[in-house]
Image (cartoon, rainbow over all chains, first blue to last red; front, side, top):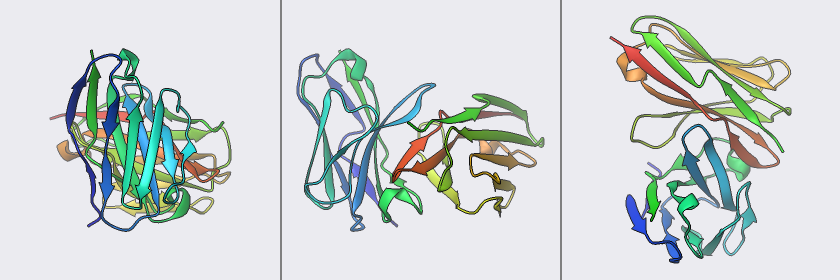
Length: 114
Length: 109
């Protein structure tokens, strides 16, 4: 089974802190994605990557950056956390470009910024 | 940009009844995917539809892709308590997957 592992299930950070959310997949997938999930808004794409050291902005990249130094690891960075970034963050990977064939999601990180 | 809309947002179903959730896109989709997220869980891929007018079944779940490839539906027959959760559709356009807001299903025993 493809596994996508997110380092933390729950995280509480203070406003202004730099926050790192880590995601690792074990199936050699080229494609990785970061979404945030908020009630009534569904899943919104923050950033994605189709290859090592490659990154593309999604629909809501403001306030976030990403890093992909190794194929299996895709990190989401909140440079200066704000309360409006309190959310559930979901990492996903896919075998095919663009996600055709389906995404595999991690269990999510529920981030609270206080 | 592409928008994927889902209706209804909430579906309260009596156990044993059928229901349908709908997904509509503002643009033509190359394919559409459906996911299920159980309460407290993460989205899990259910199925992908690619061809115009395609219909696929998974036990009590029937998925359909519209002829114009701009809408889709998920029909569940004889709803069970195990069907509880949020069902998302997602459309691929420009090599990115855009998700609808989901239909959250609760079941009355």
